[in-house]
Structure formats: C-alpha cells, structure tokens
Amino acid sequence: MPPAQDQAMPTPDSNIVPEKVRDGIDVVINGEPFRHTGDPAMPLLWYLRDVLRLTGTKYGGEAQAGNGADLVLVDGKPLPAIGQPMQALAGKQVTTVEGLAANDGTLHPLQQAFIDEDAIGCGHCTPGWLISGVALLARTAQPSDDDIDQLPNLCRCGAQTRVRRAIKRAAAGKAGQA
Ligand code: FES
Image (cartoon, rainbow, N blue to C red; front, side, top):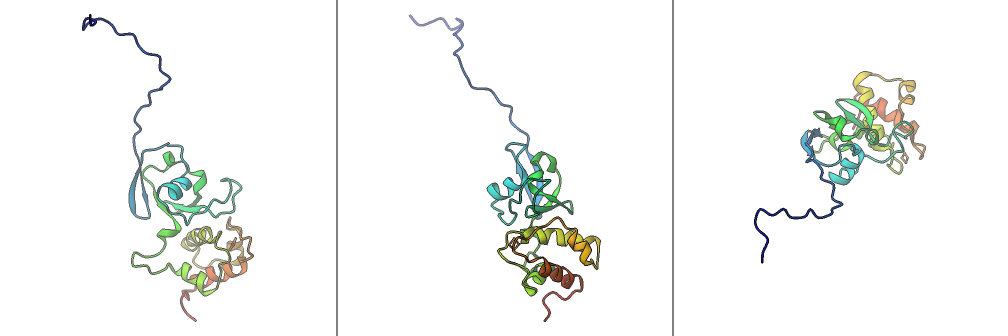
C-alpha cells in the first residue's frame, strides 16, 4: 500500500553543499562590457587568457616579483594582471595590449615605434613593455633613459636598448617615419 501523502519521507544522506548563485562582476575590457560569473578570486590574467582568449598578456611571475609581461592598464594605471582578482575590478576599465590599436587596425604609435626600432626579440616581454610604455608617455611626454629604466619590465632577449629607442621615437612623434 503506497504511503499517505502527508507521511514524512526520510532525508537521504548527501555530500552536496549548496552554493549561492554568484552575482556577476561587470568589467569593461578594451571598450567592451563583460560580466564574470565565475570565481570572484580568479586572477584577471586567467580571465583574459582562458575565458576571453586574449593571449597577448603573458604570465610573468608572481605579482610582486614578475617581469612585467602581464601588465595591463586598469583605469589607466599599469598593474600586473596576475595580482588582480576579478572581484577587485568591478566597474573598472581594463586595457590589454590587444586594445592599444585603433578600431580600424592602425597601430598605436608606440607599437609602430617598436617595429621601426626592431625592439622585439622572442616577443614574450613586448606586451608588458607596450603597456608600461604607454602609461609612461601619458605621464611624461619626453621620458629620459632613467625614466625608461625604472619601468618594471625585463627582457631576457636583450632588447632594452632598442626598447628605449622605440619609446623615445614615439615620444618624438616619429613612429612610422624613416
Ligand atoms: S623579446 Fe624576448 S624576453 Fe624580451
């Protein structure tokens, strides 16, 4: 005979832990709005590379000891993407190396200057140099060698001298000129 409707059913054992639905984290990346609904502690670097497939930004080591290859602009300030949890980016504007060129594909003058000066070896460090170089030029119109040497970027291919020339070429408005 079936149990009566109001008879209490035994509660089965379960290892499932209920998890509250997460609110989204809204962030603008290279001018486009995105909503992250995954782990709020996910570092921006992995969101860029693994979720958005923006692989220009490289892993450069941990945030305080990295080589600068993972720098991005957050509200115009260069910061290591590995050290930025998504939850810290709500409402912020992020620019990666992919966002430096104009919408029609015209390179940023500093990108063009890197090409002009052949300031690229293996390319691992290049996105980070471009990000910190753009930020440097925004705060110092004519940076000195010392200003450039203070940037937190390292190049294991030995391109620093050419990077200096590229930043100075962009500062002089000579990118794309012979
Ligand atoms: S170009 Fe290779 S590390 Fe800089």
